Length: 345
Image (tube, rainbow, N blue to C red; front, side, top):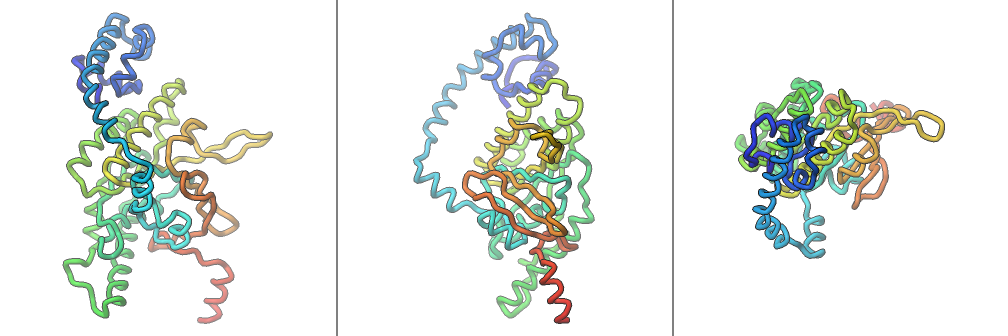
């Protein structure tokens, strides 16, 4: 984090981070009056901080040059998108509308009142070995609401292990060797769990992820459940909230690109007064709606669950049914199909 390099007190660094100032450029362009008001410090102290930030910014010219050197051609970008790895959702219909699953190198937002099973399913599926068509990676699960259920993780992990073993046996006409057989305990070991209890902890953890993932390169998925919780409480200054969320979104996008991993964020549902009536919408306002690469909204239609692609630069807006079972996310079975199966048995 750039602020960490400033020769100022730890208390002042903490105030800068809490106020959303994590880069030197965001500080050096401010007036002492504005910074002193945001940090609740004297204008003299604010002027000193701005001076240090301005001096530090001149030292970053080399890094700016490196960023320019790293430019790509449009052909390179197209090739990267076409060869991007994806994490299966365990539903054929969902994978179809998502182009094969949740894409790495992108930030995907899921909007629903609760989507715990969907998130856990991804944390399990990212571990499917490469020889079985998966990524063979690990997952980071950041829990802001305290809703993580390890019993449900174990249930889905057991189902995944059984299905992979069955699939291997049917394709090879033999049981899988013990060294490639995934055990539920191994799946749980590969989910790295963080519990955060405030928005400052959440910001600090997101800032720490770059260093952590650099030391744990097997991580291929970062989940935040939910991105919303701590930012819907005790925030009278909406401009500050927007700035904090914008900075966090940029860091998550950089992580996804730098480490070729998927970032999945859960957003809560709220009501919005539109055209004379209250309608359901995702939280955090219109500015946040542009922060993520893809936005998926989960909803009910009659007695069936659906996923709708609300926003994506490469996927068309469409929906697909899915089901939540004891084994996790699976293909949906319509009522007609259920009746036919019942009659057949």
